[in-house]
Length: 64
Image (cartoon, rainbow, N blue to C red; front, side, top):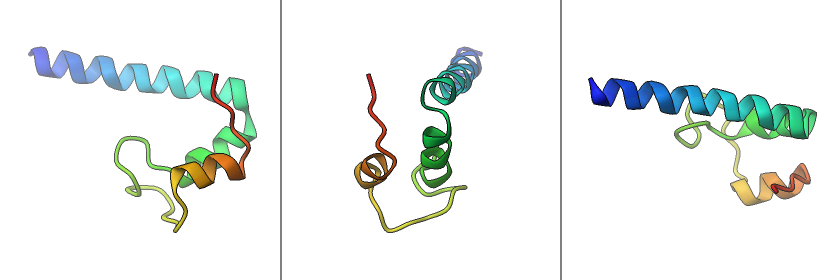
């Protein structure tokens, strides 16, 4: 029961954080999110040869 509750809490937190990042960075973050996996790298998203750092530089994302 603890594992299920913790997993639910984490998944809810991820969704809330994603929403906040879209509001903060807009289209730049949406393009970044389209290339980078949410929980596991390169699963369920378009695989590219670039690293996360390259993607951040490409979209000029600056995290506070």
